[in-house]
Image 1 (tube, rainbow over the protein chains, first blue to last red):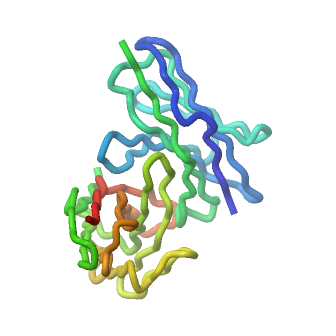
Image 2 (image 1 turned 45 degrees about the horizontal axis):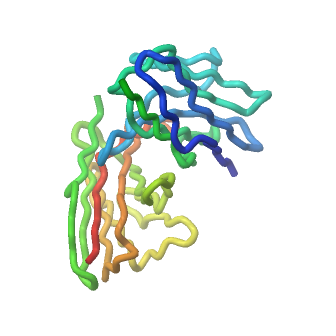
Length: 114
Length: 117
């Protein structure tokens, strides 16, 4: 079984500052890793994913995450945030047999202020 | 891109009544859909896996008689909360796998906010 830990429930940051949202996972098998973003009263949107290959993955809106197997981490980073990045961010893991079940972390609320 | 439509977005019902939530894949066929429940400031909890043409698979601790799931076609799954109580108030989200392969990506609906008074 897999589990995900997002230690920070809320991360306040000023606009144009860098941010890192932490995610650690636990699994006895190889995994796929995901970051999803949720805006108020909406479903989840896939931000980026790691399946295999390069350990650094990027999204189209400037976010990136790096898979670190030794530290069992998949932290999300952005060098310069915008007000519009304010949202809830969920890290998720599934085993590498497929996307049958996603196990989500408890989420991190990113609050960007001017 | 693939779109999952969930309806209604919000519903308020009285205790003891039943509520049906629909999840539709608009431009793709989904043999498998998933239903999640999200509590305030909590993660998403997988409730059940909905398989077209067969019975849903419920996660441990989820009452199958209370949360009825029907996946009658390749584009529609419904979740019916029967005899709703205030503790059933929550945000329910569905997702659908956009393809037949096990590693096909998941697409999420916009969720349904259920309030039971």
